[in-house]
Length: 346
Ligand code: 5AD
Ligand code: SF4
Ligand code: FES
Image (tube, rainbow, N blue to C red; front, side, top):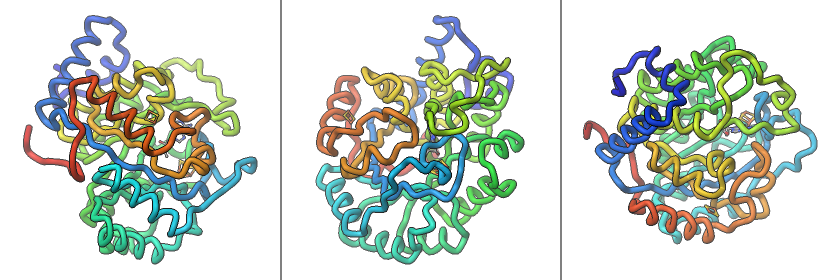
């Protein structure tokens, strides 16, 4: 029953499971599938948080536009290029260019930057720049971008409207369709334990990952930010999913089983709730990717999606060494090259 064909009811039952022996079976199955499909390599994605401006107001996020007590920054093209070269020197095969939904990021400037990265650094390029028009997605793909991350956060229409005020109905799913049609490798994902998220909703999200056959799926706990509306919401509702490490692991492990070939990061949010060995635990329970930050340290604390984020004061070099050691301690290998999604090995 722990197979990629499991039903919605089975997924929900596993999300609720608390018996340690049963959970051990879940962890072991996810780890076995991970080894058979994506192998022992752990790929590094160098994360560049290039702007914290955002025109949206997602109820959970510390970068939301209505939050006024946050100093905003947008890196210059020169600063971004320096980060890309640093990622290359560190041996990373991919850079992830991430920002809030920043109207000040000129699509043509980004396209020039994408061409420059391909020409000068030869790295795989993942974009995580929010919802854009089809023309802009196409421009960036044609410029050389390989992958795009757009977390769905929830597949439930009513809940979607609550947590994303003002967002046009169905726009995320439509944008994900466009990204697939344009030939991007597409990533999505959810947070675990957003106030209002029920076990039934989360189970449906995981099933949807399988249906859409995502190339990458990021899953981390929701960490309430005091300056967001969700910090004030009561989470004692019946059926509320808790934002704990173990429930997040269940979601990651189930996703590995449902989407055997997907690249699954051990997220920074998981490293934040358990600084000791949060990433290692995720890597043992289905994950196969890490996303070390290469943003200049002076900007990191301003990319405050949630408070007390891990690796705020470290440098790119420190994170590389830290992660490399953690991966070797698990008897895993540091992946070389871009680490694209491989198909049909399973
Ligand atoms: N806690 C954890 N993750 C968050 N994100 C946004 N706000 C939070 C939070 N409070 C995640 C969302 C978003 C990504 C940029 O960060 O999933 O897609
Ligand atoms: Fe903006 Fe993304 Fe945060 Fe939403 S989740 S407020 S789009 S940065
Ligand atoms: Fe950044 Fe460990 S990964 S310090």
